[in-house]
Image (cartoon, rainbow, N blue to C red; front, top):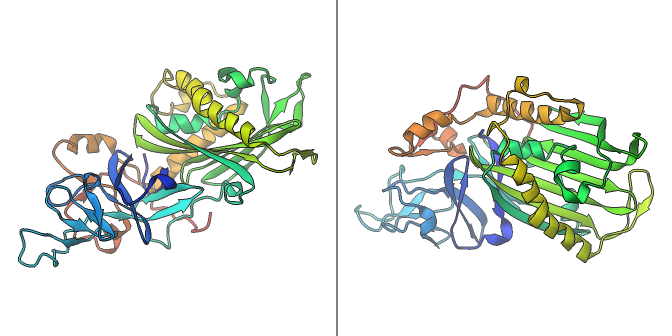
Length: 379
């Protein structure tokens, strides 16, 4: 699991002025909304380690349930009601890490890492259709006890669709990678479906995309004479063995243009509902039946799998994700596990870089990096 990345934490409409606890990268965070927007803090009070998410929102910040310490949206304590001479003048070390937050596509994204604003990458514009109002929109949150990389690989595996999922078993059992675009953190491939004679189609198949930034996969399904379907999945590591998925399902409301230039009708609201319900109640569970038995738990050593040409994107997803972690920081989970019962560790935040001294909680151990990476702010 790696830091210095955006992760989808929750659905934006689920947040109000009630604290919400979210676990990401084996650490707990508290999210809340005030008049200025949404905020994310480490979910541990620096006084006695109580969970702030069990407290309440007050004065635009959050109040610890154990002794009433109040923290503002920047994580700085503003009130210690008992124990010091001047309650409104807490020591500077009375603060918890605060993490950058953005809303996009109806989701809340948190940047977990210490890169400054001028260093952080943008959340990818991988699904602009969701913000036009011209597409039916549905979001499915699911928790799976599967490693996040196994989930990411699954969403970039074109061939499994024809065998695991009942809805696709009537389709030709094969695809060909016809076209591909790749950078150091993004891959897009056109997986064209075979026709009955074994020739690949110019207008039927899957466009699969993956971006390490925000750990997002987008699948655009094109079938003859049927509205296109966009299924975008954000995978957020809860820990090494659990993943939070936020899946967004889109279909066009009005006529659109197919890959071969022909016009395709729009989808009805009921057709979109059927797709959302099927994805949530059937498709995701069909994946789980297989993924829950796949070994090893994490991504396999490439030398221990017989990969084919259509597995190319899976191998690329693995490599670019590993390379990103090597450059920008990966958690040392072995070292962190040894500390969890007796020590508090937190994901580094931008404040750790600008003011590294005045902190009570130390940052979590990281594996050695291969030279600090750099990213353009615009992706």
